[in-house]
Length: 257
Length: 257
DNA sequence: AGCCTGGATATGTCAAGACAAATATAGGTG
DNA sequence: CACCTATATTTGTCTTGACATATCCAGGCT
Image (cartoon, rainbow over all chains, first blue to last red; front, top):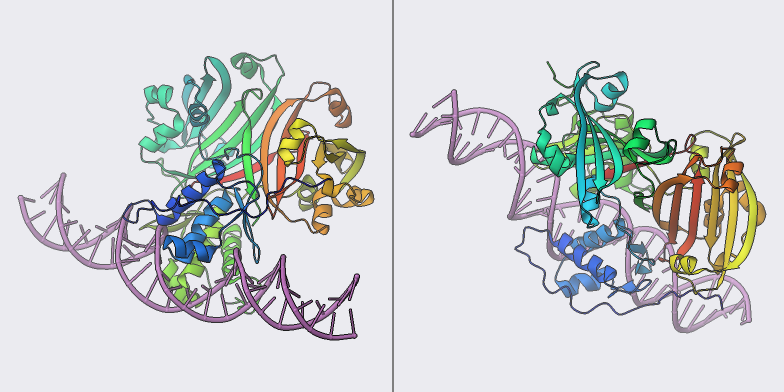
């Protein structure tokens, strides 16, 4: 028998959807999506099972079909559900791994329950090089803020973070950077990050990096260089990061559309 | 003056939307999204400019607002547009980098215009280990197909690819694997891959790997281990890949929701 | 000059309905 | 038994309409 352990149809979970709050500022589709997602992660909806169809759901919950569709789509985009026309919607197998989100390493560490610390190694105002000017869409030679930080978790160095920011951020609070992480500082200034484009690679650590990360000279490091844009489409940060590969990796979930 | 080169409002491009085909099997929202995207990549819509609002667009194109909204949302999800309530929709700065998609390295190389080749190094049927059984959701000890391949571009080795597939695929065509790439072979069998969960990291190359990739022993390699699920939520492949970091990297675009 | 308010603008959310297309199932036909 | 066909099921696409909410801007008041 080479049969896989695919679960067939399964009844839809009990009334875990009866506490929807229509007066809440949280959108209905989001409330429903949250409940579906938690039903999956809690295994109330077993892997491979088929969920109730859209029409039945919308009638049972007293919600229009477009709204229920949007809720389901949110969960599909997270890689927890798959849909097939004429068939239905099924739960994807495999345990749930947290997807890569628009957060800094700082946030990642906090989420993992570790105690992160940040040491500001250097802070300089330098004219934009050609590469920086293009990435940030600022004039060549204009002032840019260069930060170099060492991020540690429980006293163990995890990453060397180099960041370049345009002139609007020359006055960033040094003390805050020691305590809150760059992204939190930017958010508190009213900047809302919306899009990040990132390239992930690997190379040997430089001498500086290997000393900071307590690695042998030439040891492998995981690298990420990312450009982050705010909600008006302007570049707010160019990050060139260097991670200890034994302590950090990237999780990505892809959904074919 | 530290003013950035943000373009302000800009007129919407000329009638590049008048060739919509309502009888086409291609959905309307997709046709519109394609045209918006190409208007951005061709710089007909300059970076930082604001596009026409939804209502005006829907009236001008003779399309309902939900349809035009969906089209715009497609482009937002690719990281090319950002939206703000009360403000409008603007083009994100920075040149467009192709996003990471659900493709194999083979596809990536073909897209890059290089000539890829595949060498099948080994092909074995082995009982599933505990790790494999959990990742693929197959019974412990059940038959699994193990492949080891060397992927090269223009004669230069780029990656060592280890793949494990469940029993359904024990009879994969060996010849096809030499020519078409695993994903194409799976697709031609009727398998449609829908979700991929992937972890990207770095480490030193093993002796085997460094020989195959023509690297010094212990040189850094970029690694990816991914599980791919089909349109019924079943795991179809567990890939453990190892790339030459000077020839390969991962591009990821994140959009905050 | 500074602050508040109201209007204009644009996106966000939700509803109800209609038809299209893909898939599986059951039944009939050769 | 094999093949084809009709039908039920389910998701995919598109429309029209309504109201909510966030933001900017201009005008008026203090």
